[in-house]
Length: 254
Ligand SMILES: [Zn+2]
Image (cartoon, rainbow, N blue to C red; front, side):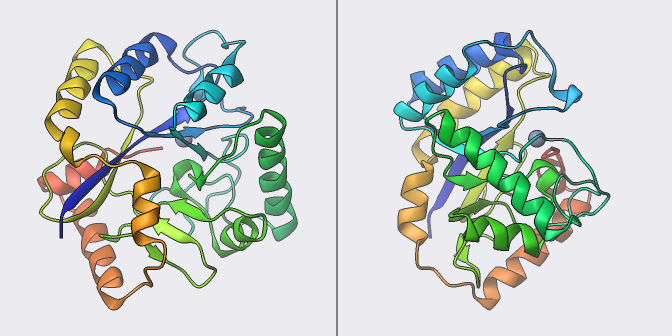
């Protein structure tokens, strides 16, 4: 089994750090890496304010989409309303987990409506704070979403709702012996050193970086097995330990 990586950037919204982003985007284009960009459709989270709002934000999103990059739906407002860690259990705050079905259905529909109005097709669910519950998943499936970027398994697998889970385990590039690893990055607070490090890692790992479409084509019919549950548990435990892997995994914050 080969090791493959996906690159995901979260918190893509009009007030993100555009100075850093321009350099990140340039590096991605130069290396021909096609990332997942987790777009907040209507950001109301003041913690994501790093720049003046980009008035042509949706033009930019449409350009990324036209380039073949994968657009993710990163919640609706990115504002936490509950203290429920949800199924993945990484953070004790959520925009979705613990809310009623009606409330969740409304948020997902409203988010999808914004994407539709802007001519953007979000392909994958990327929960703010990795936090969502069974109701979120049922409503996502009901409203046509097919892919989830989350969880700790080694390989993508289908769940009982027909959603394909593409695991997201790393907060930085690390050499892994096998499996499909999504590296989740947050560029808003990066300085020159982090940008340079990102460029270097892209070059170093380039031959093993896939794009989202290749991954879902490869694993579209893969049922979950016992091994998925076991590997999820091991990776979950490694995250809470203080080893190298734990640190890499622990870097994945919001
Ligand atoms: Zn986020």
